[in-house]
Length: 465
Ligand SMILES: O=c1ccn([C@@H]2O[C@H](COP(=O)(O)OP(=O)(O)O[C@H]3O[C@H](CO)[C@@H](O)[C@H](O)[C@H]3O)[C@@H](O)[C@H]2O)c(=O)[nH]1
Image (cartoon, rainbow, N blue to C red; front, side):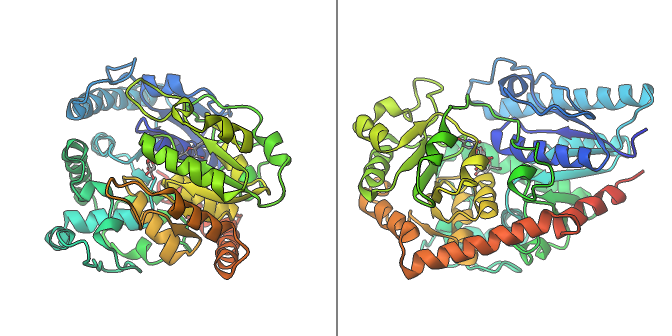
């Protein structure tokens, strides 16, 4: 008989899958049974699911098992919610009838309908927030008493925004992209979804929010909004690359892209801290002109590089290595792969710098591996993450301060940042020292008796029925 039976419902995006799978594994290691559910389409795309006793997968149909191809995202959200609610309701009922009822429901961002269902059954819930606590605070302020203040400040790019409890002044360009209205098609659909999510959280008293961060990294932000019970339990990264407690836990086990071979062997052949690793995560597709500038900078900086360029998923996307004019030279001087085990790459001694889009998982993985960054943020909350990386944690330099009239960062600027991070000068040394400091603190947090370890155990006690 299990003390805890969790149902984890995941939004179908790589950025949610990796940390949620890691949370599932930790819960199992602490004696819980966990059922993980996401859409049939996403479930089928994941090629390497973790296999553990007491961890099971039960996908549900959102009505689009071959993928949602329309741009009517509101339609998808409403069908997803209706079908998802029916699935969760039926599963709760059938598990209870079979004598092994769920004791807690956990859901990732934008799925607050899970909490609505759980309330009907008087089941405890927690949201798993896959971005920094700082972002949760910013959104909270935006949808509550500081909305007008932020909207007013955004009008003047030279203004600074000060929010209670946050240890940094934000320029409009540091805010999550959805609040800036720069992409009306996406913003007009996403912003109301976030608003609804915060409205749903308001219904609860001190909702539990498990955050993929750790105490030392965001101590103030974790306490800024006293209406929330934010519980830092990160970094959610496979144990072999963090505390080393479970040497078999060497991958997230949730990849949706085909892994390329030969990365480790290639890295083994390079001197210590000599390689620049480049990746823009699972969603970003860079414009062709930006890819060309980045390619030139990598070639000119002289360091070997490992660059992840995802295969084109459809013809309308521009990323894809065959598009690059200097592809032959690139393949001679560096290695281009479709997808790699990023945690393995970042923990390899030959990697000296990570050129990253600052997705939160990549940021945490870089901090936990002690690799300094060239922060190259694109959208979502990445510009805020880049601000934190450069100004608060001081483990990287931000490349997007100088863009040309087309919004492109040019070769010279990218190269300047690469040289700063890879160089033997004072700045490079300071970044490496800070990166090493955060690596130590990240490991400290997850080891037995560390803050994240204690928090997860306390959470289990709290939701025990
Ligand atoms: O070759 C690769 C490249 C990436 N990864 C992994 O893919 C994940 C990428 O996650 P993240 O860095 O968060 O980027 P996105 O996939 O772009 O994630 C989306 O979701 C995140 C979590 O909500 C947000 O922080 C981002 O801004 C948003 O773009 C990480 O775990 C990486 O280890 C690999 O395993 N191999």
